Length: 205
Image 1 (cartoon, rainbow, N blue to C red):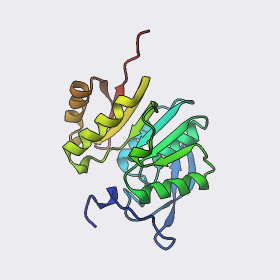
Image 2 (image 1 turned 120 degrees about the horizontal axis):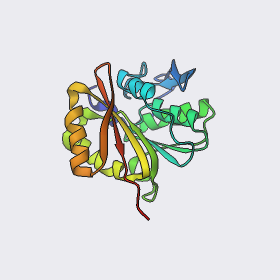
Image 3 (image 1 turned 120 degrees about the vertical axis):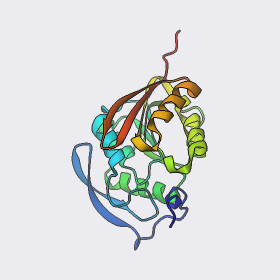
Image 4 (image 1 turned 45 degrees about the horizontal axis):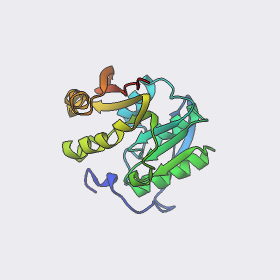
């Protein structure tokens, strides 16, 4: 398997391929299913952990987005912390989406919707977006991804992105501000990662 294959695995994992690990999400220890062919299948990776440790609890209502969800640590945390909100777990990897669905069911989370990008209705706007974006897909693909989803923040919505310090975090911050017109700040730096916060402007009515 190459370094990018986990972004595009189409086939859900078989029972023999799936394994259960224990992780800490939303202040509790939970058992989740993972499998090879998804990002960080053995643990919550360092960048995602920085985001989980540093970002305040998500809004309690509205639509929330985990962009590039993998097996679901961000989406599951959002659903645990905001049980009245609808959480969209979006990925191009069908194996990852299957694992998110299994993990949401395992944890009794009925508000998680695991979906391919094109399956999210165009009129959905997000009160919060959390992402450990797939930097290694390349700059052009990454910019296309963010240009598609960041403008879908609702009025006053917040996006939090965690990016490796040596993987272009500072240049990405500048690009979001200049090309997408969002206010964006670095709000934390830990363990080699930057946490960026982008804000949608509130409409004036």
